[in-house]
View 1 (cartoon, rainbow, N blue to C red):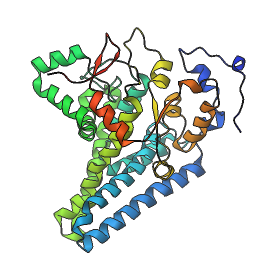
View 2 (cartoon, one colour; view 1 turned 30 degrees about the vertical axis):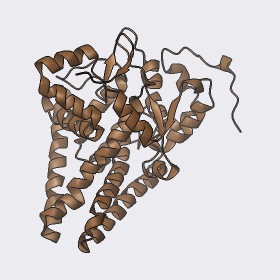
View 3 (tube, helix red, strand yellow; view 1 turned 90 degrees about the vertical axis):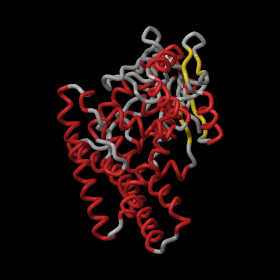
Length: 354
């Protein structure tokens, strides 16, 4: 039965998140060790099963099934990445040290340096859907923020190679996501002095374990192909899911972007975020990350409370502002074909021009 809420009980000022945060049960802002354990069990078990299937296919040389196993393993890598995502927000468990330790582990399979991603992703949350780009550092919203038509004209004229990379990333989001990881997270000079040491530490951890994993695979299989099969290709196929979620959550013909004079936290986090609702089985395997608005309401809400927080939002006076769309590849392709550049005068997406 839908809960009835009197609008007069709430501050409906839609310029900040203060009022809307009050409609969500306070319990959902706090970590729960038992639920965190269960979700960790799901993520690790899923990846173990995917690797076992990959092993059977490799051992029996079932060539036609290789692509399927890479996609399956990439899907399970996504499950682990979502848990690491919560760790980066210090939302998964109460202990910050344990969050960071687990976060490094969960990111080993997707090739993301934990601290580097943590700092760049936090910048995305501080400036969601703010039209501001600075390639010299990571302290701006760097998740699928479009170039304006005027910026693209300048880039195309003076830096045509960069313009081409931007175009390829927009037309093929998995490539854009992969490129974003490399160009954003693997340049320590983009981070300030207080964060750079931790970023380099994450490089060391990721590199050390990559060497150990690759060496172990080669030791037991005596096959370079096995290294790609069990480790590298699943991490690459993960970019399909990474791009699917991050692109759909903030890129849509129905979503606005704002310059600094018009942006506020409510517009950015609520109007600038779309729930891309997955089938229940996929949402379960990916820990509810498809329900994304509660996460932008507050990064303190762990993945295991996203759907409950979503129910509170849907039963509140703010429900009319909750954007959502069922996961649909038809819809996804439509956005890819239309969401290229931002026209500031028309305040909407336009396609690439010659």
